[in-house]
Image 1 (cartoon, rainbow, N blue to C red):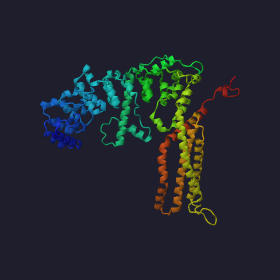
Image 2: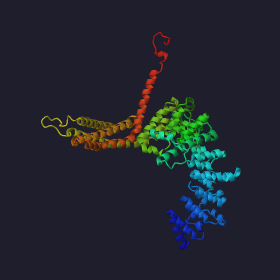
Image 3: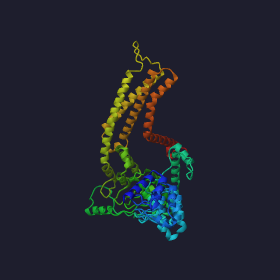
Image 4: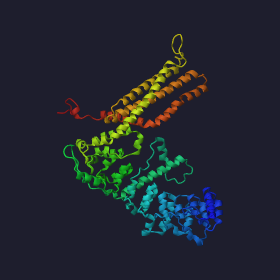
Length: 625
């Protein structure tokens, strides 16, 4: 490329970046190709870049610079095969420009890029609703039947419905599923239907916050003019729009998609043993296991995919419409309970266990590796979020899950051996042994650090008790400010701070000297750590209150505004502490409150229920003979 072209490209690109429309038009008017001049090294013309920047008026002005007799030149494709109409499909602000392009060069509508995507497909891929509506109307006006295949299918077999679901535009996905029903059963290159693809993502749900939920319910999700809304309201409206159309899409796909019927054979490829004695697996059997594990896999059914990825809405809809789908098993011979346990999907697990027939039907099943439901607790899927919780909390969740699953399993299931001659308890302990070491180290280190802080707080609180504000009367030895109301507050707060700090020290020393057995992680260790930390935080809060009381007692002048300012400054650390600490621990507080409330309700409901006749004595009509 000569220096002159380099200079032109540099000026054009800079003008486009700075959105200097007049300069862009002036430069284009002075060069041979005009607006069809390629600016980038990837073959993008001036119009390509102008469309990318959503400059509707500039694009129309550039199009007017192209003579009608040269309209065929508008079909220029860049290095990725995208035309200027493809670029309009990436945003909703250039619909007018798209209409003008099609008026001048109608052939743009059916042109595909290097991946076999038409502009309509491109709009679905980017999830742009307005331009999609326009292009879809244009396509259906001129193409019907087999001719539509070009617009709905990509070279890699992915359909436009697959891409719309991946773009999270559920309104668009619903429209495509309604108007082109044959797409519902189409599979992409990974043999996945649209419903299977939708089952692999957690859909947005309504907000749980009380105040936000009230606003959420009052919003109209189909409101088009949102210019008057604040940014948070716009996001909330968009969230409601997605939630409602996701629900409609789920109902439609579940009703029409027949992939839920596909399941593996219930005949297990491996058998389980009921004790750990006798012969061990032969070399041939071990070779069969390895061959089976290395076999190619197909996608699971939507029910199992939704269970695996935590999309409980799809699970609920499938089991509501097709309750017989609960019999599904995957290529590993695992049913929905196996998958829910392994992926720690408590919602689905509780939902299935709550159905008596389903629980009785599925609880004794084993997979192709002879794993029972209890074995699945030890075969958990790696989760990034669990690393953030701390190894002790993850281990606690695993131990609680094991106990929870054990309540629905038979005694025989606790003794069964899988294909590797391991009981469920052995699998759990072996797979969590490293985590136990990490949890021990983490808890010991945390307890030591908390102990140091607690001792420092106790030292300060102890010293404050003997250096009371205002000092002592030299004659009587009594505090000078003893009669002040805030002095009593100071004394109580200081005593509580000292007491809580020493209690925290005891709790954390108990953790340091613990034996760290697996069963200790279920309740005692984590409970002690939480209690010790709560005592430490309470001690800090009381020490802050002591500081505030001391400051007010010694500096207060009796003037109203001075005192108000002093109160605000003194209690500011307490307010900051509450706002900083409470959001982190509110979940634990609410969990404890919920458990207490449930316990009380169960107690009262038990007392209100009529007692069986065997409980009564005497010769009344309810007595036992």
